Image 1: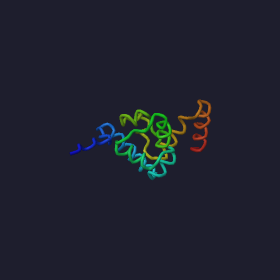
Image 2: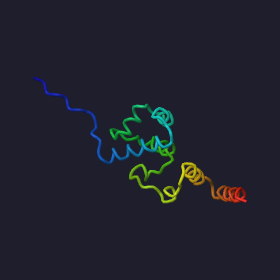
Image 3: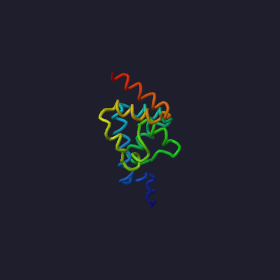
Image 4: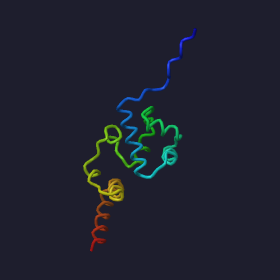
Length: 121
């Protein structure tokens, strides 16, 4: 009589399930399929499924690309907390503008503010 092999599947923890749910919810909010997100990260669709179910976490080197694709911070990924400015953004377009503006140099941000002010006149 042989003993059954122990399962090699990782049992998801509550934290990994919650992170996976955040990834899936944001992916769907952005209108991405699992295939599109996988292509953006250079991983398989199965890897995205594993992330979203909490059975696997993204490798450290893939996290920056995941955060960029989802438009989120590492704090959000790990805890679900979002900076107050992002929470205040009412639309996806407002959030996109905010995130893009943050990546500009201070000089470019000044130019952007002047452009917005000119458009409002």
